[in-house]
Length: 183
Image: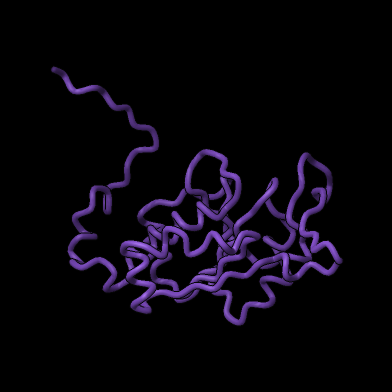
């Protein structure tokens, strides 16, 4: 599997993915990645990548032409994912589905996100790692990739491990309540 990671902070990769199971799998060639910095596609002297949202709104978003050029630069973008708190929730079933893809392209947003137009044009799907806000999509991309990489053939030593995991076939309920053990 290959992951294209679009991020304004390329130094964040491989990050945790360079250690433990994912790091060993990377060293063994079971997966690979390329980091693309959208700033490389800025055309002004200051390498500006952000602008006010088209149609108004608070904050700044990554400019549409920057995203478009970054995606166009990829020889094989594969399945395109934008890490977003408003996306469908990442779960084990989705991680398994993604582990069967040959190429993933992950867009890591910053500021208030990215301009929606290139996401629609390039048919990015939005995936969330939880109901909270991060400073950017880089940590979410690492979470998603960790969940996917461990499902690749040969990454986990015993393939039977996946069948015995706590919620491989029975997802956890959306809301759980925990009670303290009785003394």
